[in-house]
Length: 221
Length: 387
Image (cartoon, rainbow over all chains, first blue to last red; front, top):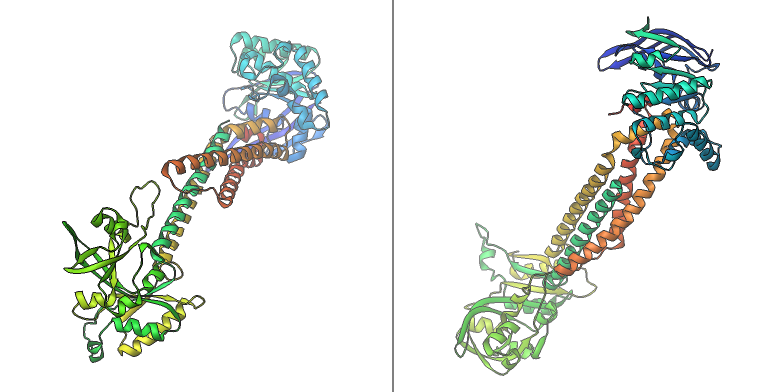
């Protein structure tokens, strides 16, 4: 089991009120699975995703990722896990505007430490080629189309060879053609053996996954 | 980059304001030196009290005899000059006007650091014999005789009495910045006559308006003042006079004025620092949200707070140092241009340069590091959603 979450709960404080975004969720993901998490706004699907991707910590519950208990981790240790085990793709791409495509993709390796610049470059280029973006290597993100930007983001998520690829509404900011392009990429990656978990409210996107986890009001239904 | 521009402008503004204002202060100090004279003591009549006692009524107040007395008896004094001044009518040929006439002694020249252009100043003999001689200020000599130097040997009527011109003083000049007028012209518009003649010809009684005294070099002004006070008190029987320090130096009104000026300079300086600092901080902080979100993404990719901090520090250091230096250059250039047009002395002293750059660097660093510090306390998710 790659992901093992038990009784995951998350409560936010909003002014004077406590908001329970997750109310005790169990989730399992096996290596090589393609899972989609769906649900209406406020169902807690993004919150769950952020916890699974180590971008946030649960208020209570336990979380094992790739054999390691990460629920109690913080700071530097957690940053390491993020860097090595998870590749995150955002709805808004979140590329660094002042860096070239190649520099963007190599960025996670920079934070890993111990990899020389030449090697970082080489790995980034390999991935960009694999995703069909070889011609865009020297460009800035603002010179790319939406679909291309998201695929660069996917390359960046993969460069560190993470255990899991996670995506939060990856087609949310794309037109249907680019969206289809991105979903094809995910399908190819899944076919090559990658484990993918994505969050979406789009049923067409959810349909491409092997398994769907439905959420409502902070719980799995 | 916008932040670089902010640093350049902020630093330049601090430098320019401080240098120009500092130049003004220097100019004012020079002027006050010229006018105030150095370390003189002035004795003047005190106002009569509401209910004068017998002593006060009996006292003759300040007289020429007092001046002679102090000259003989006050060991702490190097020069004594009685001040007698009236407005009299001047007449030469068809030219006539009313102007100031000063009755005094040869010491006046030493005390006020002036000298004749042609001819001579008053002498002790003139005073002893109540001679009807006059030394003219440059402007009046010029107005009365067409050419200032031609006045020597001529006659001039002062207050209806004829005097022989024995000398013409050098022209005293001081120009402020781009102001065209001579700030010291009033000193060229007068005539000097012997005090004894003045009292005899134009005054009913021996009474002086004030005494100007100069202490011996090496004698503290306070000591000289104390000596004068006790001597005059013994003579008058009552303290119906005021003694104050004049010109530069502790207690002098010029000294106090300068203190005020320097204080204003300090206030202006601080205000310009704050303004410059705000310019810098404002521009750097304009992108706080954007930067914190960027840090959020980097943290999501595995960057630690330390890594982000180091990265930002390097970037901010480069911007602030380059921006600060360029700003210093721009400020110095601007100062030079304005000083040239205004004909003011304005120099960017090392002190000003240091103050400006240190302020710019400090503000720049703090404002530049602020987003990193903010982001470091947040989880990646919170940073990504920062607003």
